[in-house]
Amino acid sequence: MDLNLFYQKKLFFRFVINKLANVPLDYKERNSLIDKSRQEGSAHLKAAVVLLLNFKKINGQSEYVFQLIKRSQNVSQAGDISCPGGMLQPKHDNFLSSFLKTGMLPTLRGNTAKRIQKVNGETAELIRLFLTNALREAWEEIGLNPLNTKYLGALPSYSLSLLARTIFPVVCVTRKPFIYKLSSEVEKILEIPLNFFFQSSNYGMLDVTTSLGENAEPMRYQTPCLAIPDENGNNDILWGATFNIIQNFLRIISDDCVPTDYSSRTFKKVLTLKYISPRG
Picture 1: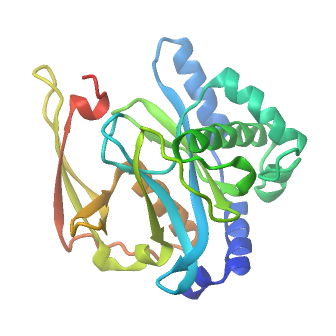
Picture 2: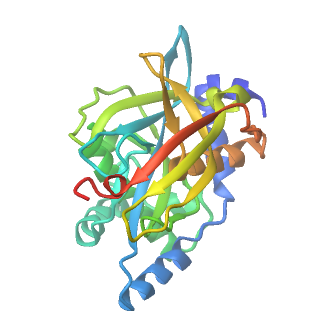
């Protein structure tokens, strides 16, 4: 892939739309499975996140960046890097998604979801629902006005077994810079250039150990991660669901040209009950 695309505002915008247009989506099937499991007593939850792109000047040159959040100590998964988003509120989000369907908001006008991404009517409805869910959460978490976004496409769902939830990711671009208004759930914003993800030296392996109480068998495993230098000379670690969602997006737009060697260094993380629930 020609990484110079990241520095070309309009060309990259159209490029992403075209790449996402042919991505098979599992929203209809996954949503039905979750509904069925909940009828049978499962506590599996639905959530949506928005993978935000923004074209801005970094070190004197304008380029595309991801706008991600670092979760505060007030919420579960504290310290993790994630996309803005959160749990679906069915009644609330179904009502709000009707405004997207009417075309009143520039984010997604009329049948744009169906036209941009080749999907059936039911999947288009689910895209609108989860786009509404993600943008509502982004408004609450970082002060992103939905009028300041443009929908580019959706990504396949991603399920987390440890937390019993499925994430439905959508991709948007912010039309212009805005002043962040962080909620108590967010410690800070990270703006990471897309080209950062194409440098092998930025990757590593995360050695994860679980300590979830006396009755839970400890687990240990390794998973790929991305190390992001912070202002104090340390690293913020991008891993887990958000890492995989972003990697999936980058593989789609680059035709699998992202680095695959993660062996250069190792980091450690311990997951406790507090990680799953701050009150645990």
